[in-house]
Length: 276
Image 1: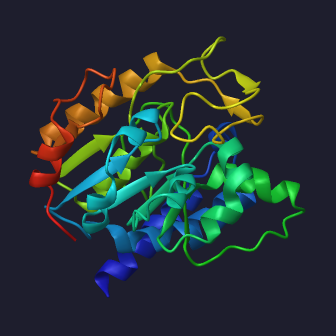
Image 2 (image 1 turned 180 degrees about the horizontal axis):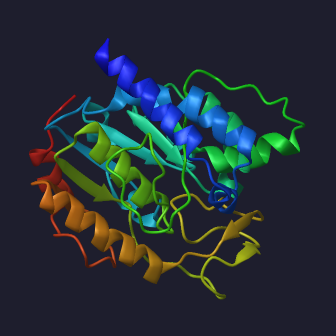
C-alpha cells in the first residue's frame, strides 16, 4: 500500500511541477498529463524484472546478414526500429522492441502493434503521428510509451524523462538498465553509414538502403542521417553508468566500427548470456 501511495505522490509532484520546458520536448500540456497519469505507471512493472540477467540488443546494421541469429531465440533480446523486416528469414522470438524516431514510428506503427512482445515507443513521436490521424489512433495493449527528450541524460528510471542520445540503441540501454540486466551484448551496431549530408538531416533515401540489414529498410522513404559523434558521447555515458553500477556492456558486432565497449565474439557472447 505504501508503494502505491508513493507512486501516486510521485506522479502528482511531476504534474504540479509541469513547466513550459516540456513543450521543448514536443509534448503539449494535455499529452504530458496523459503520459504522467496513464502511461508512466504502466512502465513500473518492468523495474528490475530481469535483475542480474543478460540480454542482447540487436542493432539493424548489414552485419546481421553475416550471422546465424537462430540461437537468439533462447535468450532475452531487444529489437530496434524495423527489426520486424528480418522475421522473413528468422523468428527472433523478441523479448522487447523499441522505437523513438518519428519517421520510423509513422512508417511502422501498424507493424509495432502486431508484435507479440512489449513495444516501447517515444510518446512524443506517437503523439505527433496521432495528431495526423485526427487523434483517432487506437493504442494496442502491447505498446508502452516512454517520455524522451533530453539529449545525453542516462536515466536509471524510465518512468521519468530519458535521453534519446541520437540513437535508439542508447534508449535500449537505459531500458535494459531499468529492467536490471547486468550484462548487455550488442550485435548489428555497425556504427558505419553511407550517407552525404549533415548529422540528423532529413532526407529521402532513393533506391535500396545500404545501411541496414534489409535493402527495403528506408528505401525511397524519409529518414534522418546518423549522428555518429553524438551517438558516441551517449555510448560513453552508458558505459560509465553501467560500469559504475557493477554492470557491463559488450560489443559483439561483426566488423563493427564502434570502439567504446569491450569487443568479444558473437560466439563468446552466446556462451556468457543466460537463457530465458
